[in-house]
Image (cartoon, rainbow, N blue to C red; front, side, top):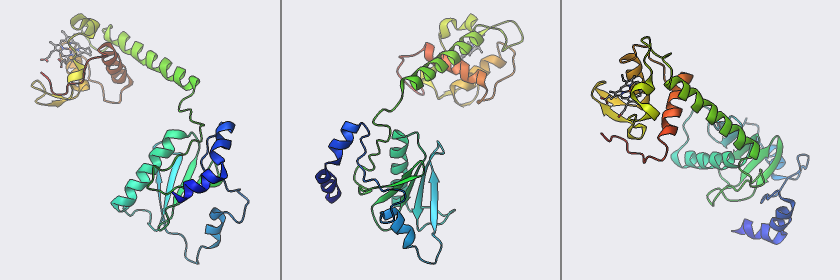
Length: 246
Ligand code: HEC
């Protein structure tokens, strides 16, 4: 609350909105010796920092938590804080962001692409609002690339579904499942008596490859399996998910 008032008083939000950057943060010059980031380093004791580093799945967002060693588990409260922070960082940037969570304070220290600045908000209050993308989540180009890739894989699945290449007897999926009919992807996972187990869609795809088509089953990460699943799911788009339904 105190921090927001300070930011408001500085009129930073208005300035930044005009600039299109939308930063609600107080930047600290990388070379500014008086900044909290620099002060922190300067005040470090003789002991080396004991920290724990958590990296998000894009390998670009890193959170360093002071006071916990590598290889030790964070207490639940701290772990939740780190997860929250990583999610917030993931949402907004393509940049390499390093966040440092001090053990005591509620301030988060950040650097983006090596440029240090500090996020002044308190950790527990809707934190952190890091609009380093200027609020644009995905670019037009990204959306086009993703759509093209989706189309390509679905088409690959369509072709496999309509060819006998997955089997050895000339039979193809579409001969029994025209337009992916009766594949019921929305009902998975469900118990399948043939397999005597809870099955995923891919387990039944393999069952059909091995049995009517006398082919060799695919591994779960085979690109052909991915393509078949992509085609079947897209052909049945709009169905309500109903796992377990028979
Ligand atoms: C000879 C006909 C035939 C062929 C060829 C065939 N299937 Fe099937 N498929 C069936 C039958 C019959 C079932 C129903 C099995 C059951 O649920 O007891 C089935 C079930 C399935 C299911 C589960 C459906 C559900 O209701 O849960 C999927 C998914 C599936 N097949 C995909 C494929 C794919 C992919 C191919 C090609 C690789 C293929 N099938 C080839 C006959 C065939």
